[in-house]
Structure formats: structure tokens, C-alpha cells
Length: 177
Image (cartoon, rainbow, N blue to C red; front, side, top):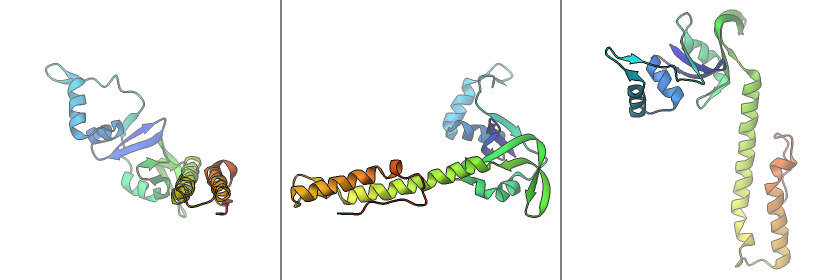
């Protein structure tokens, strides 16, 4: 199994090196083959990867990569890995067992990702409230000026929710007029 990592943080995993390289580069297959042709020269063909920077690709042959990544399932979501790679195996606890592995979960990165996901949901909820109250500020709204001002204040408080709340689990939502 091949893995790519950047600063020892897992980026991609694939059974073949070329697919791992393609994925870490973010290329579709035709783009990958065009790139490969651009770095290949000579007869016999020689591939020059010296211009590649930002990531490293390694083959992991002394560990069941997929099984280990399954154990670290909480550390990945939608192609984002909060998993660190080590060139030499390190001790890790899995359940009650201690194993030797190249992979370890990055709790700090995972917690930051989960927190950001919560804030994304708060902003989605806030944005839905803003959209559902758009009618209140239109020129042809049936509201009188005093009511429009109350709705404008409410909508501003909605916009300020992320700024005015430090605990994503305890949001102080404004009350609709």
C-alpha cells in the first residue's frame, strides 16, 4: 500500500504508487498522464520526479494499512486525515493491546476539525434564518418602519452569532421580533 504524506501528516492512500501520486496532486487520470509525459524523457524513458515538492510517497509493506486506518476511523472524514505517519514504527494502544505501527491519530487536528464542523453547522443554521427573513427588509415588505428596524437588528444579531459566541455548544441565538 502506498501513502503520501506532507510534514508526516497523511494525505492519500492507494494500492498503486501512480494512483497515490495522482490523488495527492488532485489530478484526474488524463491530467495525470499528461503530467507524467511532461516529466518523462529519453530512451529508455526516465521519469524525473525531482521537481515534486510538498509531499512524500512511501510504500508501507510491513503493516496492514487498511486495517490500521479502520482502527483510526475517528481521525478521518471526507478525505481529510488527522493521522500522522512515522517512518519507523511507534507504539500505539488499540483497545487493550499495544501495537507497533507507522500511523497515529492526531488528537489536536481531529479536535480542530470537529470544532470547525460544528461552527459550519452554526453558520448554516444562521444563514437559513437570514434567508427565511429576507422578506422583512425588502422595499415592498408589508411591515411598518418600526418593525423593519427590529428585523434589521435581529438579522444583524444573526450575522454576529459566530463573533459573539465563544462556545459552539452553547450558542446564544437572538429572538425573532
